[in-house]
Image 1: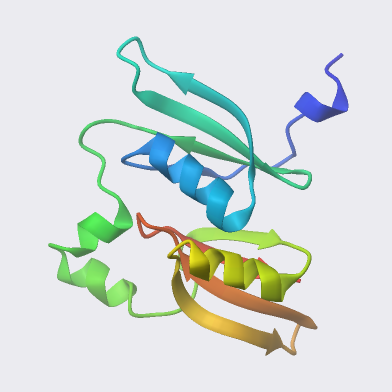
Image 2: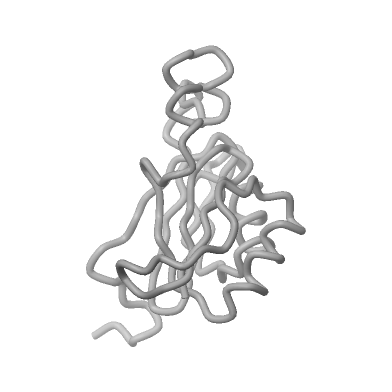
Length: 143
């Protein structure tokens, strides 16, 4: 039987990145995730990283040389640029954190693209903010 520290949650988001190693390092710095595993190919290219946040896990992966991040795709696709104009999380990950004000400042200091400042979501009774990482993936943090 696996110990509690190695068990996977019931649902695990999987996000593709052009540069998995850089993305993982940035997500740890900006959002406070903990690295829980890193796997490389024979050529040394980082292909997969597991990150932990509380009892949650996010998997980062490199699907192929042909993959293009949301940010790079928007550079040559008008439709993708239009989708990016919305501050809402079209495809992304929601993460609950403590000390949301401090978390936002940490993300801002790391260079995150702030999509919406701290706001009160009265429908669900929580505070939140939205952000994009360097490759254009969107995250929503709540407290």
